[in-house]
Amino acid sequence: MTQSLVCHVMLVVIFILVALAEAQTPPGINNPSHATCKDPSYKECHNLVHVCPKFCPDSCTVNCQSCKPVCGGDITPSPPVYTPPTPTPYSPPPTTTPSPPTESTPPTPPTSSPPPTTTPSPPKSTPPTPTPSTPSPTTPSPPEESTPPTPTPSSPPPTTPAPQKDLTPPTPSSPATPTWSTPPSKPKKVKCKNHNYPKCYASEHLCPASCPGQCEVDCVSCKPVCNCDMPGAVCQDPRFIGGDGITFYFHGKKDQDFCLVADNNLHINGHFIGKRNKNMGRDFTWVQSIGVLFDNHKVQISAQKTSSWDDTIDRISVTFDGENIFIPKSEGAKWQSFTTSITRIHDTNHIVVEVENLFRITAKVVPITNEESRIHNYDITNDDCFAHLDLKFKFFSLSNEVDGVLGQTYRNNYVSKVKMGVLMPVMGGYSKFVSTDSFATDCSVAKFKSTEEDDSSLNLQLPSLSCQSGIDGRGVVCKR
Image (cartoon, rainbow, N blue to C red; front, top):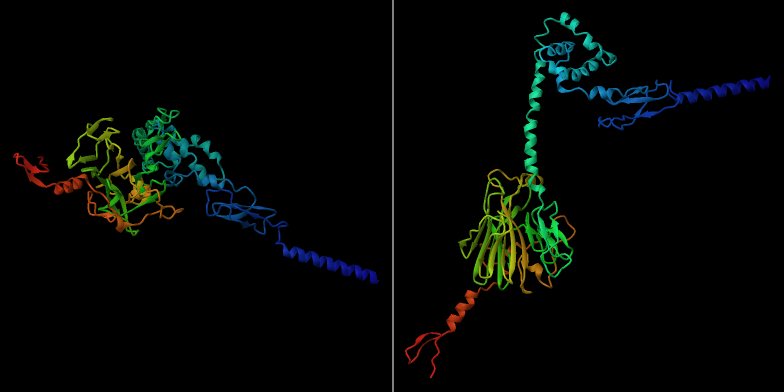
């Protein structure tokens, strides 16, 4: 008797345990599971984890359109139904849509291609039966009888030819693109011209894609290098590459002049133009012109102001001792006066000014393009494209006392003060390098002395004498 009681008690205990286990699991599901939306086109729902409803038998899937879990696994057709609709099928949502195809086919037989495109829209209105796509051709007559007045509302569907008219403009626009792409597709060919490197001398190279028209061959490495990436370059929002090879920026200030090179026998000032940036504490600046002093001569190279840019129009101007220099617009054309020469590298906007044994300056006039303005937020308007100079300097006889924004980097003992490792290392010294005009030598680091000053001092030391022979004048020496 006691054994039977024990058995009953054990059975009751087992039953209670089973009931508790079932209570922890929601009714109707033995293995709780999760599901996610697998369609990446639904960004808000994609990969978002959902718990299956308790009434699902085993598993569930997520309807990406409603972003809710549903029982079963056949919910994938919802995305294709959502993606095909175009703006046109939404305008005629009523069931009268089958009638427009029949109306459109008689007037325009070539529009047989559009009806197939409109056929996917009926399946959207009746998703459970995709088969109506085949009956649609067999049912043109019933819709005509059932809806005789509908031809008048069917007049909107003739808007379909309008898209065909819209398709025509892209065709004329396509030829416009090749015209823009052709100029950059011709990289310049350059050669090494240094006889001291026989392995590289006269070997021909193509300029890199980043500077298709502005490069030269580094005869040491025998590779083409962009002019703005070589020591002595001053380009863009002025980005300098010093004689020590270190890149830095000197923003200066718009409409002012600064000493770029200050030496005993050479002085170069740069005139900055620019545009104020409301969101920054400085101006966007570019070098518009340079004034060069050497011996008793003055050379000025300038970029002329222009609203729109055309590379076939020459926007570069050069003066020598105050007189304008006119050079024929052809590559290789040259002007020379004693030791000074000016040569065109290109038909327009690109020259080289060289003084024997002193310096060589390569200057190219370039605009601020719309793309550059967009990327750097220059906010360039149509009235001025801020044409400026991209420069490259080569010096042959600088002293170790040379100074200036660029010149100081050529001293043997120079140590760069710019902060390295930052995106835009900036050099200060605005007050030290500022000057009053393009040919002024009044910056605090100026050292220039012209030969005229030496000659004038010599003339002051010569006395005026009168000899018995009747010869007289300044600098005359009388002999017995």
